[in-house]
Structure formats: C-alpha cells, structure tokens
Image (cartoon, rainbow, N blue to C red):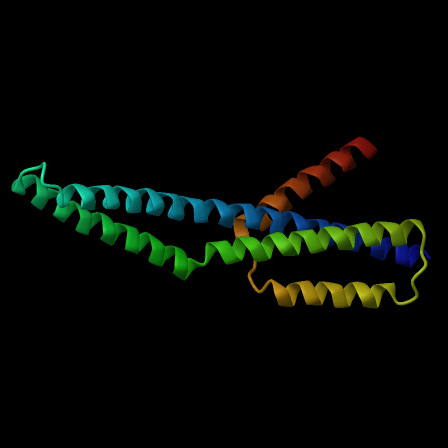
Amino acid sequence: MDKNNKFYKIMTERLRKKKFTHSNASNYYNKLQKYVMYPSIGITALSSIASFISTSEYVGSDVQNGFSLSVGILVSISTLLQSISASCDYATKSELHGSAAQEYDKLITKLLFEIELPDEEEFVKTMENSILEIQSKCKFIPPQFIIDDYDKKNIVNENTVLINNE
C-alpha cells in the first residue's frame, strides 16, 4: 500500500503541473489572440469610416484622395493582422490548452478520491489511458517559459517545506 501512496503523490504533483501549465498556456494564447484581433477590428472600423468619407460629396477631391489612400493602407494592415492570427491559430491553442487543464483537474479530483477511498482495481491503467487521451486531443505543448515558471515555484515550495521540516 505504501508503494501506491508514493505513486499517487507523484501522480498528483504531475497532474497539478500539467493543469498549471495548460491553464497558463490557455491564458497566454488568449491574450495573444486579443492583441492581434482587437487592433484588427479597430482598424477595420476606421477603414470603413474613411471609405465612407472618401466617397462623400462634402469633402474636396484632395481630401477624398487622402482618405482613399488611407483606406488602402488600413485595409492592408488589417489583412496582415488577420493573416497573422490565422497562421498562429492562437484561439485554437487557447481552447485546447483550456480543455486540457479542465481534464487534468478532473483527473486530480479522481486521484484524490482514490487516495482517500481506493475502490478501483484498474485505477492506474484508467489514469494512464485518460492522460494519453488528453495528450492526443491537445497536440500543442505549453510554452517553455510557463513550464520553467512552474518548476521555479515548485523548487521554492520544496525548499520552504524542507527548511520548515528540519
């Protein structure tokens, strides 16, 4: 039984790391998506206004030409931002990492129940299959700086526990 408890504690920590890294990766990619899409939306709105003004009879032909040129430039910038968004696929990455974090959270809950009240014979095999399924659904690896951040915090926590227990 001691062997199982040690294994369950190791698995709990691994699952917590995966939940942390995928949750933070989801937030990171969501922010990147906003940084690209919000300016694109604003630029598109401005180009629509400029396009309307460029066809207005109430402004002179020089002003109309200036607005027409501005529309072309703004539309080009907006297209560039939308192309970046599509090629980087930040929204999909955010969604998949968020789903993975939720699934890892569910596994942590199941594991904690199994630690408290063991009742599944094939629990380890079930956990393994669940982890492999989550990994197959989320093919993106969290950014390395997020993994490093978790590791730094974990080392600090381990050192604090060691110092307090001595």
